[in-house]
Image (cartoon, rainbow, N blue to C red; front, side, top):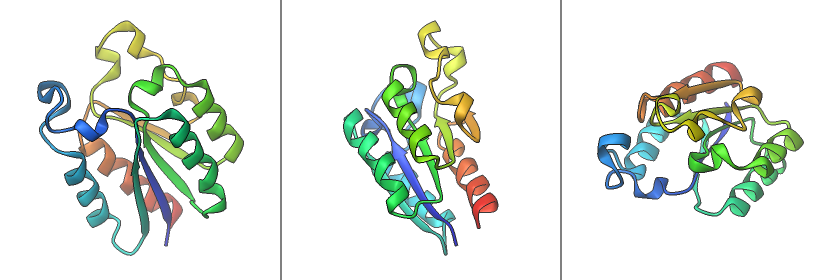
Length: 143
């Protein structure tokens, strides 16, 4: 059985109420519940933070915690956080990058990701389904 860490970045705690036309009406709590349903038999931890340093600490501690794969929606940190990228490179834990919206159909600055080139896979633009697809892929690959 796989040990999987889900990381939700800044402002994702506002899902369901924040720009629903762009991000949908599904709450983060509902997404996490569905992820737990999909992960039956696997060890899954869901974590959300608005603080870059807390996310970096979580990534760094994941190796010691025996995490086999990470699924992350870095949110706005996608386009700014070299420190998070360095954390992933340091711990060498494979990860999937997820975005609810299609970042390539948005503002030009959102087209750049500091994670896509080192991720196993990237899912963008499918709403909560992107999380579920990444989790299914992780389960198949790491079980």
